[in-house]
Amino acid sequence: MYTPTFKTLSRLFYIVACLLLLQWLFGCQPKEVTSAKIYMQNRDWENAIEQLEIAVENDPENAEAHFLLGKAYGHKARYREMKNEFEKSLQLSETFRPQITAERERHWTDQYNAGIIALDKRDYAKGEKYFKTAILIDSSKHEAHKKLAVCFLNSNQLNNALFVYNRLLEKYPNDSELLISVANLYYSQNKFEQTVATLKKVLKIEPDHRDALANLAITYERLGRMDKAFRAFERAIKANPLDQDLIFLYGVHHYKRENYLKSIQLFQRVLELNPNEFEATSNIGNAYLSMAESLRKKLKKANNGTYTPEEIQNLKNRIILNYKRAIPYLEKALEIRPKDPDLWRNLGVAYTNTDNREKGQQAFLKSEELRLESPQ
Image 1 (cartoon, rainbow, N blue to C red):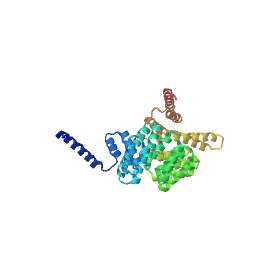
Image 2 (cartoon, rainbow, N blue to C red):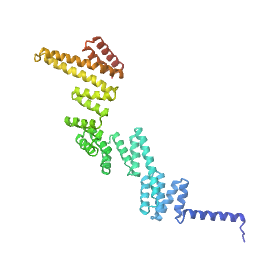
Image 3 (cartoon, rainbow, N blue to C red):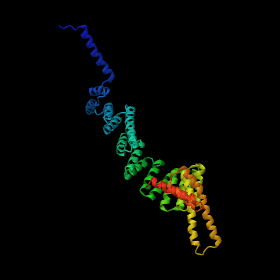
Image 4 (cartoon, rainbow, N blue to C red):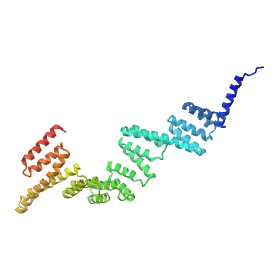
């Protein structure tokens, strides 16, 4: 009879101890699940998936097997299958919800961050792919939906962008940021009535919303509804009295309507907030020039004999005064941006019409030199 040696007994004891340890660790579970866990510890996802697919086929009610299979699918970027297995696990038991939530969050974050990188690189096709995958993993996070819409916008898929925004608005009807995005999209498509309607929804939620009021004013302007545009600008500035961009936009609005005195007043308010603001400075100078040119046209009609000599002289004085008023603003603007040929030309006009002909000639020459240096 064979008598085991001490060494052989020790090995048998070790094997039994290992089996007992595995039984203690994994309990009474299918051997496929036990094998899959070992494979997963070694990051052998293919074999883990193979074992777990057998496990869920043999025992469809095993919530742990479904969870583990979903986790393994996630590591192989099989996200749709991952999602299905997680849902099956949760239908059977709440036991693994914390782990499932953590897995979803990790994969969603990876895809979302990859989409942001692609968006920063203006690779909108890749961004679209990543954000769609993030939405597949967890559709409840609206950040990925918003970024997907941005990808659609930048790749000129405007209807797709609008579809995404409107789906989001079904869930978040009072999200002002979403409504502003939809309004901007309508505006870009020249759908101005829809733009107005959407912006009004924002103002019902936030009556003093800065962008909604400013965009409403600009949209009314495009529709030719000037009175409503003026009122919207006034409301916006009243709610944001220190917002120089709003004040400047309102000034431009009046400038384009040839309301030069009102535009000058608004540009002056911008300079009170920011004394070195280039656009406001140059626009004041140009507004005075435009006023002078308008009076010159009026003076030509005055020569038909409909004005008295005193009225004609008064017109001449006002013309010269406006040219003089333009000069310091044009000079200051050129200190800020000295290589602007149009400003040099305008300054030449102002100098010439205030008897500074030598300075005017120099300004005209400077304008021509700059144009030759950078031909367009």
